[in-house]
Amino acid sequence: MTTATHPPATATDTEGISVTPTPGGFDATVVRRDTTRITIHSNGFADEVSQRAQDGAFVLLDRNVHEAWRDALRLPAGSYLIVEPGEHHKTLQQAACVVDQLHERGIHRTQPLIGVGGGTTTDLVGLVANLYFRGVPAVYVPTTLLGMIDAAIGGKTGVNHPRQKNLLGSFSHPSAVAVHLDALDTVPHHHTVSALGEALKLAVADNQNDLFHLLDRGVRLLDDPVLLTHVVSTCIATKLRLLGENAFERDLARVLNLGHTVAHPLEEITDYRIPHGTAVGIGVAVAAHISHQRSLLPETDLHKILAALRRLALPVMDPDFDRDELASRVQRLKLQRGGTSLHYVLPTAIGSTTIVDEVHTAELYQAVHQLTAYQKRTS
Image 1 (cartoon, rainbow, N blue to C red):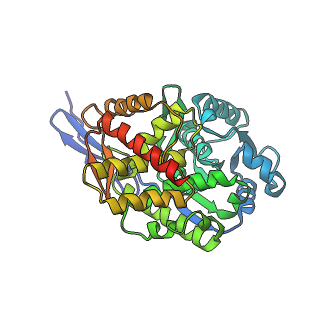
Image 2: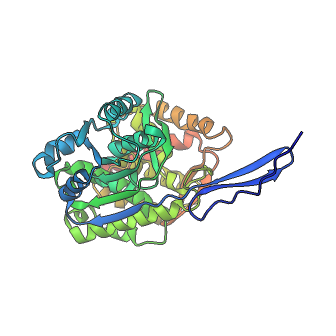
Image 3: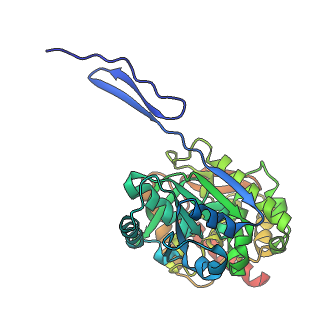
């Protein structure tokens, strides 16, 4: 028998496979390098989308955006497809329908897909782009504040499943994210306010920015274009820094999960009546209360966090949900995360966190009770 020998393959600086012989086989290390160009503009939203369509990209357009910007976008005939927005439509069924339309229209594997809409739209488009022909270029043009500072940043794509929010998804970075603040002009004010819950999470989680100070200005910051641009830019930079070397979540202990252990179950059990940013804000309040009860977070910082939420016109608690179901779903997350740790993120100061293995149901109930009382006092 003749044994073929080959020199070790070496990955390039950009991407490739390096192969190292081992007893009985090989270790193959796959290296992939993705670059996302993120730009932030005060205006030019319609021109951005129109130009990309004229350059040959195919636009997947949130229905709400289409209705609000139809005349300004000037999209060539056959260059776009309308998708339904919202958590109820972020499904595998809609993704499959989009794929059917792409194939029927002859969209090829080098033709970029442009996701234009809120976070649910860019999540859906990102997954479709990752699946179609095993991956086509994607560009996001987020049109909501939540999309700009969270959903379009970090490479997560996905759809919901009847059993769980974002149960199906992938990590796939777009080639570009184009943020245009004038896209917010047609977004209902309460949707934009809700996104400030995600901004506050970043402010509480990280101490290398002035975000908490910026948000301390309250909801009026939304009326100041210069300040809002600074907030958006700081949120994006903070999220990318916190992702660090854990961009694919191989380590489940993630500071960016602050507020989310409560937020996702809360969204699910209220049938998405509570929008994501608002739910994250409530989740941060719960985490802060539990941390204070464990003597990990000073009382002054607890009150700063709760007061900041109220100044941002966000609730610290919702009065109408099944707390037993919330507790059950929070504990269920422990099983999904391996069964040994809940990886619950608790703030220990403004800009500092710790991650604990367990949060007891009694602690959760107490936080809900105390925060409900606080909400009533401050409403």
